[in-house]
Image (cartoon, rainbow, N blue to C red; front, top):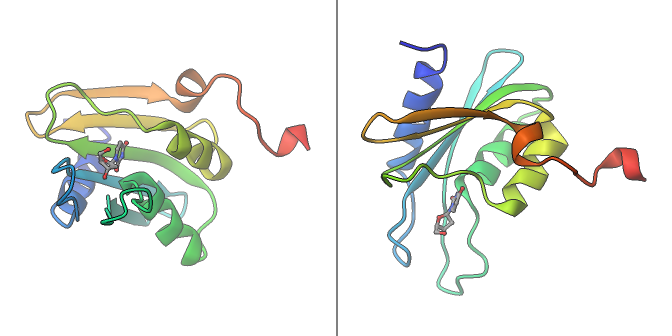
Length: 130
Ligand code: THU
């Protein structure tokens, strides 16, 4: 049991909806807002490949478009034995909207790691640079 079990379960459920016919790499994410709501996201691929959107960004955009601001944690689940950290583009977006949150990476086999965003993304470009 960990404080992130329910968030991991939400990411795992979101992964079920992944549209990943090109890579067959199915990803689920779940984002917990400060108000306690959880927003799931899955990767949504496209035949052009480049228009693919990662699970993390889908979850973030769902939450932001629902009016949520302020987030506590994000979980990412794949079926890969090697745990899947967020890609560079998603790190930029997670930093923008979530700041130094815990990033919970887990797989279907039950492995879990927690990393803070400041460790994954140590020298960001953000609003403080403008
Ligand atoms: N992907 C994600 O959704 N999140 C990640 O953290 C890594 C990569 C997706 C993008 C693409 O659909 C597939 O995984 C393979 O790169």
